[in-house]
Length: 457
Image (tube, rainbow, N blue to C red; front, side):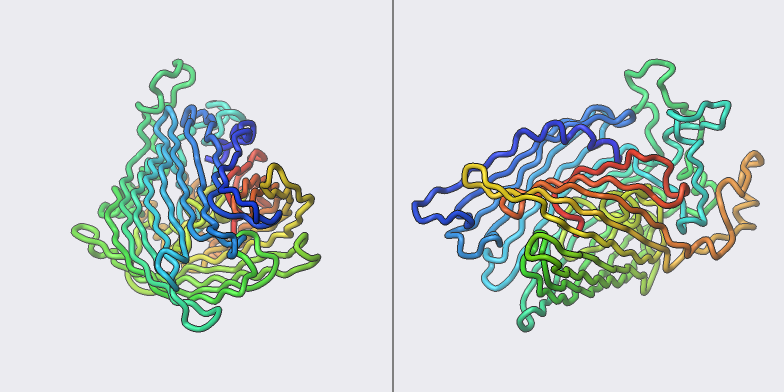
């Protein structure tokens, strides 16, 4: 999914605003309504042509709280000719309910080619030759671009309320629903309309199917399920602003209890998340060091594999936080490369504002941010090599799939890169990040470009 955003930057011409006017409006203060919009146009060889749009509507009232908004409405709708979709509504306000912050998210995320690279990070061997048709031929070992994929549709509803304990200390309570519908890749759908030499083979099982055959993925969890959850925790927030703060600390710790029913009743679980972010000013509002450290831990029960790459969060700034690997966690590393019961990660960025300017009372800045990302497994799956060997096909070599040296499990995954930021009125921020992994086991491509809205954290 990394390359599906490549063409978006070309269409960054539809950035405009509708703002309530006032004779008393000061140069650097926003009042009333501000509207930012951007088309979502892209192409991916497997998912087809993407078309759609995203928009963010802010209401600043009389401007007394600027750059903090009173209400934010975020809309995004995009689809492709090969059935990848992103449909989202997100609302955020500290003023709808006086003295409480309310966030609401409703999303439907159908994904015809979701990534699956196996369990425990480096314990699962990644073979680029098996899926990279641009570099390798069948004679050299190429299998299919769908080998490390499966179909995954997510329907999500969540609502969270935050209140104040004392000054910067906050409490949080939330509830939501996650519904997963998963299966092997629909090769017939992906091949529709393709020339014979461009069609994916429909007789080669992918890694997801092999994990089912080897009883690594249990039959109860192999098709997904319905999981309501409840969440509670505390947070500390001393940031000077939420969008690209130049100083302050944000930290939280919270529990998430996820329920499961019927065949999945054994998969009730309790998870703990702890996060720490620090923003260190270096030069005024122009240069700051930003870093975060986080972990997600399974405390009680069992968690189905498809929710173990869902990173729980108190505030859904982006449509989906997946851990670990990809543009929302470890940039430059294969999406969902690290799949385990528990993980830890860190991101470090040097954020530099190069220039600030105004266009028709709208306030812009352009910035860059070199960064370093790192993550690792903390709670590994237990893989029974003897059981897998007894169930595998005779042509499958275990060394092609697994590194059973336990030291490989906890080896960190690292990447680095640089980002470009174009911001309007502090809150609408176009983010373009490019990154490369340190280890070829985390991806052999240099085209790891991500175009999204907002900073990573």
